[in-house]
Amino acid sequence: MKTHLAKHGIHCPTSSIQPAKKGQDIRSFMGGKQSLTHQEILERNAIRWIVTDMVTDMKAFTTVESPEFQQMFRDIPGIEPPFTSRHTLWDRIMQEFAIQRKT
Image (tube, rainbow, N blue to C red; front, side, top):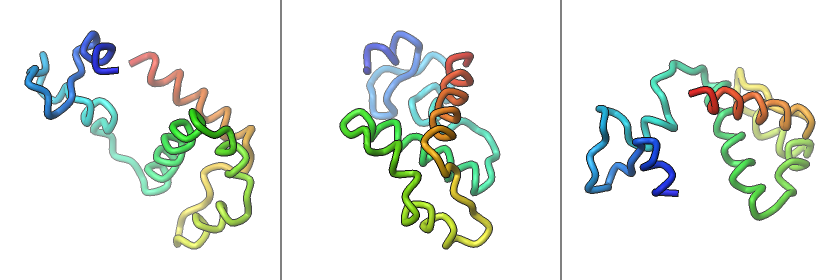
């Protein structure tokens, strides 16, 4: 992974290699400088968790359909569950992939 990221000029913040451009470490690449709503941040983090977790356990896709999973979001004022079905989740992951691939 480090080699792949270095190929694109993205380095670990603790690396001895200095990035080619200011702010070109992995934190700035993943975090961006976007102004996101709490709902958008929650959705982005849920996608990251699910994509990361699905490497070891495909259960993450059906987890979003669980009433208990959805209730965690509904208990936060002003927040809705970002996905209520595995199909919506899949579509959202594909959209995010297409966006990240263009950058």
